[in-house]
Image (tube, rainbow, N blue to C red; front, side):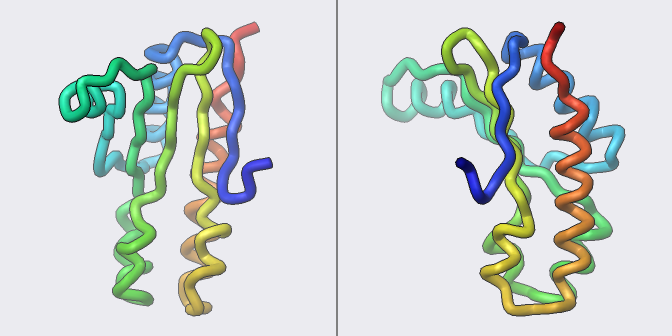
Length: 132
């Protein structure tokens, strides 16, 4: 069981899932700071053919600002990642649980900010439903 995130397998093509996640991120006003395409990077740097695997580094600007004011070193565990990858002709969607990371930070001012971010990420996770 994944204790630091939420994960589910979907009967959708990788690209379709990525598009749905992108749409939901925009609806939630979450921005993507980074897109890491591991298939591309492993091919480029290692000459290895790898499955489709993308990591989206996301954040919500108001929360990010408040979090940095409360704890300048929060950038060590920031942004919050969403991973999408192929497994057995399905797409796996995994989203970090910020509250799991919050246990590493001893700062009560961050707790509400982190809870709010987790609610936003959970809403996105729950909105991506398997094709019937």
